[in-house]
Image (cartoon, rainbow, N blue to C red):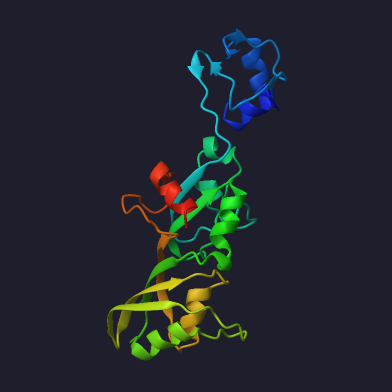
Length: 238
């Protein structure tokens, strides 16, 4: 059971003070009865709550797919930079979502946001072996020796040995290469540092898949949408 004002506030109907005013105006009904007090206890999952005749759709968790743009940080708060949470409408911010893992400030592409802590842990923990696939542009030629290095597990600059990864060459020449990289970890700047260990530099990085979920190419950078039921089931089954 939860307080009515907390439930409605969390669903975007304003602050608890705003909700108190809505209730006072007689605009809220619980199971067909006009609510007399904003602090009454309700079961949001079982009670039928309406505001101005409209049924309130209660949900505990939200799941969003974002096409993260360049220059925005994967954090809930930052003193200097715009965050991915800043890009969300208020109706989603009230759920206090957080990014699942992170993408570097200059990395773009698929980022999941949710307030479901259990799913977050499952997706970012290396022990669950969840694939993260990136499209990358490299400043020089990439060849089979690099593919083999990824398969063996690259040692980063701090001595950490990465889990085996997959490197797929799309095209390659001395002027630059296009590749797909599949990893199951999320160390700081990991993809960039893996190539750095091979004396190569990542000039563009975009995450295109996460946990079997592909980036919706219809989403412009900076845009987001809720996951479909099918997408959510796919994530939860990895």
